[in-house]
Amino acid sequence: MQLTKRAAAVDRSPMTLGERIYIPAIAKGLKITLGHIFKKKATVSYPEEKRPFSPVFRGLHVLNRDEQGRENCTACGLCALACPAEAITMEAAERKKGEEHLYREEKYAAKYEINMLRCIFCGNCEEACPKDAIYMSETVMPSNYTRDYFIYKKQDMLITDEQLAKRNATGKG
Ligand code: SF4
Ligand code: SF4
Image (cartoon, rainbow, N blue to C red; front, side):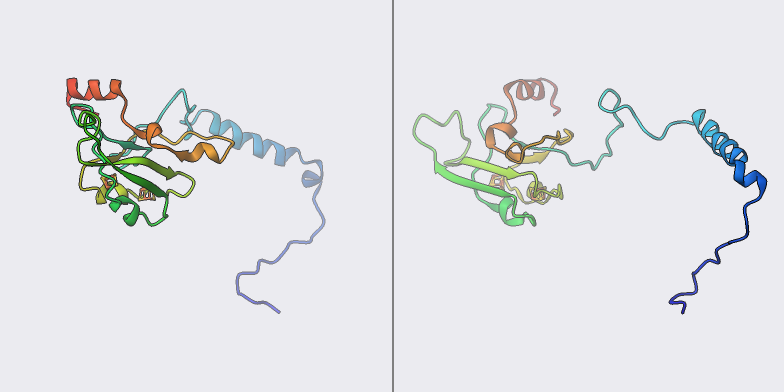
C-alpha cells in the first residue's frame, strides 16, 4: 500500500548492451566533470584565501579598554543575563587604591569567562552592555581538539596594547 503519492515506478527491464558495458555512463559522468573544471569555483582555499565578511558578521568577543588602557567592564552582569546560552560567567571585585589606571570604574571583573562551545554568536551580550565593554570582532573562532581550549578567559579576550595603540592612532578597530 502506498503511503504517499510520491512513489516512483522502478524500471526492471533487462539492461541494454550499452548499459552493460558502462562506457556511455562513464563518458556521461566525465562530460559533467570536465564541464565543471573550467567553471568558477564556489570554494576558496581557506585559510590562505578569505572571503570578505558580511557587515553584520559576529566573530570572537573582545573585552574593551578605554583610550587610557583601563578595562571598561564593571562586572554588572547584564551580558550574562542577556545570554540565551548561559555561556558567560564572571566574578566582580572592588577596585583598590592605586588601581585607577587599570580599571575605569570602582568595580571590575576579576574573572570573566565565555564558554565558546555554548555561545551561538547571537550578539545579545554586546547589545546588553551599558559600558561598551564587550564587542564581537571579525576574528573567526579557531578550531581545536580539547574542550578546555574553548573556555575563553578574560586575558584571552582583553584588547591588547598593540590593538589599543592602533585604535588610538587610527580611530578604528
Ligand atoms: S554572543 Fe550570544 S550566546 Fe554568545 S556569549 Fe554573547 S549573548 Fe551569549
Ligand atoms: S561586559 Fe558589559 S554587560 Fe558584561 S559585565 Fe561587563 S560591563 Fe556589564
